[in-house]
Length: 491
Image (tube, rainbow, N blue to C red; front, top):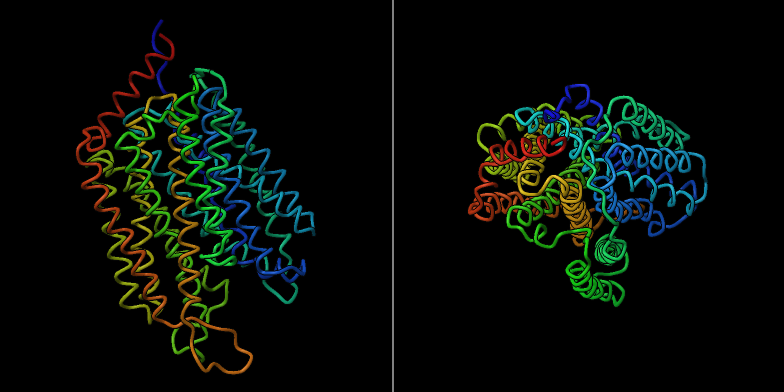
């Protein structure tokens, strides 16, 4: 019997790109409307922060579990199930006026983050090797585009004297339904289902580890970084990490193969993902806050509204990321994922150096952001290629799921660090009734830290990934892997 060859084309890439874009929108959709939700529900800042924290924790818990489940039992049914959950969560959030049920809806939306690693698994199975890196780069590029699009959509839907946050979640529900229909119609059934038993103990201990780690990171600013609760959770996370490693080394069919997890290319790619997530979210938060500063009061900033901040200052970054995605895929094929990651990180260093030294004009902020957009796109193109070239076919979903978590952890750390920095030094002698506002030096420091994160990515790519041939030449490894996978499916 002749081997079954990959047959996926542009339509499949567009469908999976749409699904990934919708997922990324769930992450930033609520950022511009947290104040509206707080006022409408009459709750505190600490309580409303759970609207974002709940999604982060849910994504961290469900992404590796569902990525592994899709690897074992089929990507398409797992994709459909996750999208149905996202539709239900969006409708719940759109119809409730209870903070508790809104948080439940956000937990359901957060589970949909697993769609991205599942989409990459489908691409690996269905796209020919010579087209794979470009396809992964395009789907990865939609993540940044979706984040920016969500900010614009939320800003537009909450304009006026009586803003209603429910409209934003109805938008999420409609887009999730469109993505669900597209996946049902356009994604073929999985041809590679190795099966196996679900490692519930490993999944549970990993979930506990991630919650114990991310909870103090996301809430530390509210609780206090030296409080007993914050420090206690960090200590508990370290203990649970040891428990998780012990469990995964003992069970017969582990959820995460520790050898794969500690494999040099996978380990350093995850480190690069954490740093990239930190830098990307630092740019988003830093620029968003910077341009909204009232110039007449602070002496810096551009007095921008939330909508103007999203459309004028952040959207160009996301559009540039999408446009650069195909270039990133081409570079992966021609010079390798390792050097593409290096080039992207170098763009990031340049972009943040620009922002650090010159953020006093709109043109400078926008153009520097576009350079950073190229850096993000190249990083998103390179990391899936590095992961795919370094793990067996049946571990693609879980490996990319762990990489997605590393970026989420980086984003959570950036949110905590930048928020704390901006609150640590405020302008003295403000007019009566004006809330505390950060000194300009804190934005400068924030952008410098993000540039430092990209500089570390350069070192990770050149030094950390240097000794492994497959990480240096992933296009050759991936071609070989894909050829073997195609032959083994129907041999």
